[in-house]
Image (cartoon, rainbow, N blue to C red; front, side, top):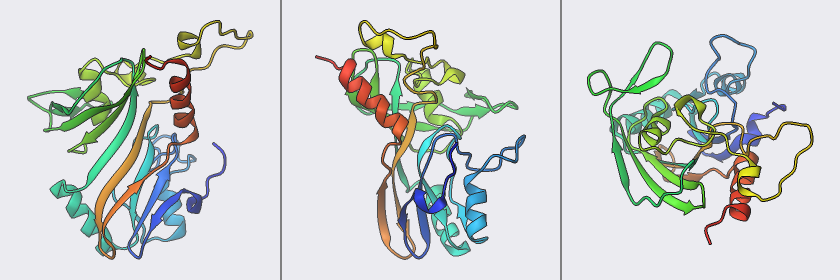
Length: 241
């Protein structure tokens, strides 16, 4: 990954809160087995020891993250997460063409010792995600995903439970997609064809919360280049006509 400057990631800032648009493949926390990898928390602490992550995103997931500048702001935002008054929307591309209107998936989730998330009524914690279709293609769909709880891999597992595994999410049954699947007469050299997107097709698109100093705030995080290119290719070669 090319050198990342924290200030270039900022999409919102006030006296108490910073919001960044986290790139894909940047860890929120320190990697347990490889401390040389850059992490969002380390970038924050290098700037100011008082900065703290208000929540996390999976390493492969891009999008908006909130960072508090002081203890009071952290507690203020943490209380909103606990009361579930913060509204988050993710955009995801799934390996199916579906038209969803307020599909509520309410399945309890359990994380095993290998950090694989399973559906378990007995051991799992209550979890709810609401799915809506933003655009359908011939073979895929762009979905809006609103998690009302914040469990590990929640959107990925809930989507997979409906036979809507996210593109490139091999951990939960998602398949890689290739240009040759949607564009006729595509020819490649001896070099192996690369997938349309090389990581889980999930982006934290927006968040609504209360800032201690600014009141209600809504932030949108623009698509990163890989997600933007994916959508453009689907628009061009897989459009429903």
